[in-house]
Amino acid sequence: MELLRSLTIGQYVPRASPVHRLDPRTKVLATTALLVVVFLARDFAALGLFALFLVVCLLLAQIPVEFVLRGLRPIWFLLVLTLLLQVFFGAASEGTALWRLGPLVATREGLMQGLFVTARLVLLVVATSLLTFTTSPVELADGMERLLRPFRRVGVPAHELAMMMTIALRFIPTLVEETEKIMKAQMARGADLDTGGLLRRARALVPILVPLFVSAFRRADELALAMEARCYRGGEGRTRMKQLRFRGPDAFAAAVVLLASFMVLLPGRVRW
Amino acid sequence: MSTGDAVVACQGLTHVYLRGTPFEAVALEGVDLVIRRGECVGVVGRTGSGKSTLVQHFNGLLRPTEGSVWVDGVRLDGRGETVREVRRRVGLVFQYPEHQLFEETVFQDVAFGPRNLGLDPEEVEERVRESLRWVGLDPERFGPRSPLSLSGGEMRRVAIAGVLAMRPKVLVLDEPTAGLDPRGRREILEHIRRWRREQHLTVVLVSHSMDDVARLCDRVVVLHRGRVFLDAPVREAFAQADRLRGVGLDVPRVTDVLLRLRAGGLPVRTDCLTVEEACEEIVSALQAGGSAWSSSEA
Image 1: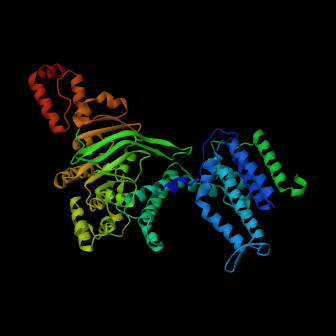
Image 2: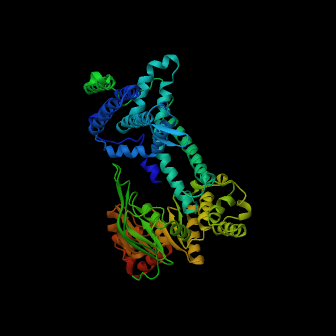
Image 3: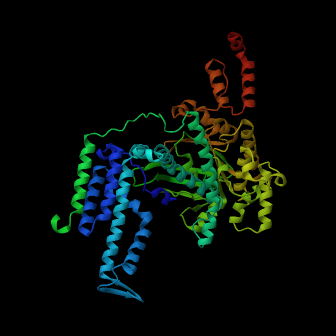
């Protein structure tokens, strides 16, 4: 249960910081740009610079770095796996051998590449969580809807997508809470969720998943009814309470992100 | 207060949710509490006062951030065996327990607990039948039905039967009557009273309803902002109407009526707990010289 609670990816941390106040569109676009940059970065120095930039952003957003690291905990397995796969089966299998494990050879080059890919993955996660840490789900959906609006002409249901996203995000904490409650209720009836083999553990999930689905459907029904009772009928002609507006700080933030991206992407020789 | 017959005891119990995150919240702070064998204790308090957090410590679902919890003299230390044993002794019925039903039939669902205890099939069947009868459902008629096809009140009783089938010594009920109609409510309370009598159960009732607590409990524990605000026998507790109202709680409707009569000048005792008791009290007060009051009022 602690795991569910420590899942900080995708969580919003309310703060009164300049990063929080930016227009969500700015943040979505900036994050997209940063994600592209992470993939284009060629060497460790570039990633280091990128990491530095992220840390500055986190400090500005008043989000403790330790809290961000906690968010990486659920994916540590993925990180280790990536590292191992890269070291032993990566493209750089030719090179100085470091150590051998049967037919497997770990090379210096392979290790470096493994570390590089893993670091890239970490930065990827941190960059995206920076967006969700500082942008409430509603703002995020609003921003996405506005950004997708031009594509409506080619059949992208911008409003519906945004609404689906808002609802999905809105219900993540609710479902987590519900899962916790059901787990506790079944544990109170002697359910054992932590021991036994894979099959046993999988079977132990049934008493949790069935009630969870039942309650998810019930919630969906109730929500649909509540929305219809307030005359919701889709995006056509809908006005909104909060109007999105680009302001000075948005332009400034965009400039900073562009500059940082440029610095990161400069070839190593030129940068220094 | 002797602690020799304590079934559940908390000492300096503090619980902090999400410690070390921006969402840190202190739910309980230094709670000392003893629940004695055979007692029925009502735990009341406003939403967020820590009631549910408190009772989840009783069977080891939550572990204290600080302080300790003892059940039957055994300190809950989070070891697997202790936890399993404690969950068998302390049955916890959550709010809206019908939301935890998952099996295809009522019978299977009630059997979930006993099966987890590793009992043999005959014993399981025996317990299921008995538990269903305890909650007033005919095992022959309801056993084979799908729990999702029942009415709300029936579903709740099936869920409670699922906990009773563990044969706990202490039964903790978190808002057992929430969302039920008056009849469903009365039935559940009546059942609880009977289990107490017939099975010598120790009962902890978490409730918003002062009426339910007055009707059922011997003692009231009032939680306010994670601390024990008041711990007294029911009559004494509800006599302190002003203190209770001060922390956003109310008194039972019976007490309320008596308090108003008294404020209006009729010298009645205000520590009655049932309607019948209150009627007698009012009648005797009127006969004893309140007649002047009644005529002046008319």
